[in-house]
Image (tube, rainbow over all chains, first blue to last red; front, side, top):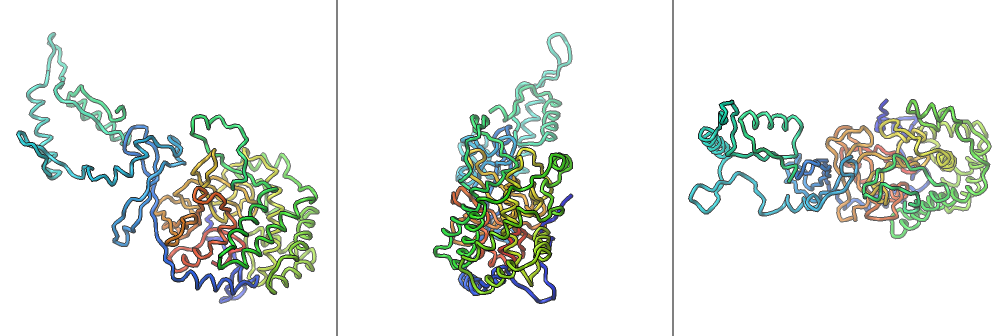
Length: 199
Length: 305
């Protein structure tokens, strides 16, 4: 059963065109007009409120994010407030100090917004494209694996161990992402594998 | 609603993570008195002052008649068990029949309301309620309980609403909060009625949880935040407030069903009352009228917006 509140008819009128309010019916029509004219110069401001998951650890606390500025109207939205989600079964509105400081991370000037690379021999980071960054990572991984993969142990048993590269996975992921991550990393032979969840 | 005491032992508070109770039943001894105080306080400096003072007088009258009314007839055990099993409201509005307790409530309230300062139409309507026969009163009660008020005799129905509020608050107070179950989207678990507004509470046992307030029986029931009260959607939820105000009252809008319900923040003002602040923030409704959203909440004393 889903009683949709907004479709209920609270006020019945016998004839079309008869409209009124509780205030009018009780004889406070003048008061209603006064309020209407007093409120006219004021404007409404919109805040968007969404539910999300904290980015930090695998406890995956629920958070509420509030933002000002309407994206649908082509405005730029800014996050104004972040708080713990009371309705979330994991944290019931509470947040750890890291989670409570999320808003500062969002607006931090030091925050990494795009891939940066420090080339061998250089002392500065420079911005690179995602394609370049991923190509570079794949190249380095492949070279390292080709060079260092241990295919057999001392007894001649096939082991395919890749011990020279480690992998640290993120925590704010779905089960499916975690499953794929595990398959990719372990299939490549990597044994040094950990998760942000334990950090 | 700071009048709720927190004397109930709650071990989950020790860990600082309390489970918000699903429903909170009204306290007849406090609900109308608190409402009257809040309305009086809000009236100061408000453009709505005459109306708020009238409603404060009505709430004081509701509080005053409570004193020595005949006992209400609580639903029997069979009804309660059936309601809990099949997710139905234990207070069945459709099967409500006029009894001595309600007759006395309406009679005394109508008498007490005579002393309130009011405009001519309100006084005339009160006289018509006082002189109405049992059949006419029964018809008005049916309309109010069906949340469907005829425009032609709206004022009379509002006095009947006030009496029914007293009656249903007493009925709801006799129920057990733990046995109440979720009935439907935006429906009171006690009487099945629509909410008048919602309240983000600041109770020690549930800081920040949101509760809807029933327009008839005053029960508060938990409703997940950022979730439309009217249709249950969690997409496209926004909050509208009047620029430059304290942010105590906001309208939660839903793009899915195009409606809005007010949210009151107890953390911003500890004295907010779901009825009083809803009426007092009429300006927000008037501004919302020019937008795409329509009012989904039901407050009999704020119909037509």
